[in-house]
Image 1 (cartoon, one colour):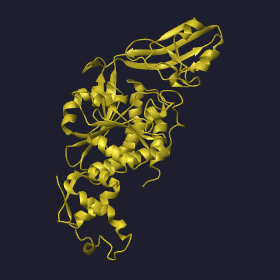
Image 2 (cartoon, helix red, strand yellow):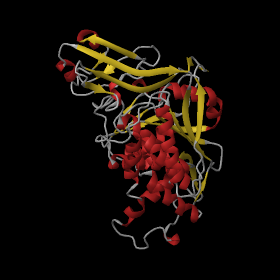
Image 3 (cartoon, rainbow, N blue to C red):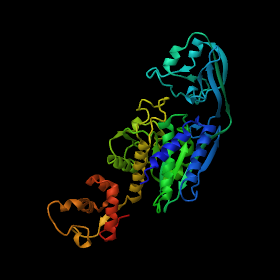
Image 4 (tube, rainbow, N blue to C red):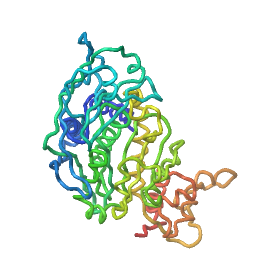
Length: 436
């Protein structure tokens, strides 16, 4: 294993962290450009990965929604009467409410406070606040800073505009032997928050490299980088029929870079292949938390909506909304680590291996096969010698053509990654066969 992979993912997140993103706009396109450059120039195979960019014009109807105007933000600050900037968008892009319309006005303190958002329960942080679908303006600062402001006049200035533009998303499709697909989705619509925003795209970029490097791929792999909610709705409005026909498992990646617990948000009914494989892998990775679909909050909402019904779960480390730094300035680059990313990378690559090898297997002999004559069992029998092959004999005991690899793993309490080489040995010795 490349021990630098976690650091590589961290470095991608660090590159895109400073960018001011929203559901539309130049920040999204800049982020996609960085990811496309990394994926294309660092895959070790001559840049053969195609990163496709799609623009959907403002005003386009997408199911029950409409693509909004594109937000252009150039400058935002508040200054006092001595022209001291008490907050400045250029120092922290969380200081301006997302999608704020222009303002250029001198007001007294009380009037200014009507346009200030804070997080009183966390008085030292700047909150993340947006108003995508109703035109207004606002600023964000810490509760402590707001309470420390002296009486006087203040200059509120936002240089922004809403224009007819585009919603932009990126997509990579890596073909496999067949048309059945594994789907990965992550979002690119938040400003400078490290775990909530930058970790998912960074991990996805490295997973693309991993999938592309696989010598054989049973499945086709589809990765999309979209604005949350409106992006997934837009993508589904254009691709739903195809996805319903071809997708067998999907994963929404969010908040994957910290070192806390692992988490899964289940699909709507909690019974898809994606639910089964991710829970199986996480059960051997360490402590993890399971959240029902009732505790959803990211794009798993759209993928599981009635009538859409795609087999998608959400994978996180600390689940969105459950960690104190979420949607605040405390979600900075100190919250994510190379070790946290390495853990997420290990989880998702094991998920991919498990899916690639997940078949039903059937034993080809009656009763127990004689493993010794095939060099698969110790030729001297004594207390303890059986332990070394117990995983193999347990696998054979449940290889009845009905249990798939994930199911057998759950029954005999052995990780799929342990069973894969056992399967290969048993097939090589003509003791089992694939059933479908």
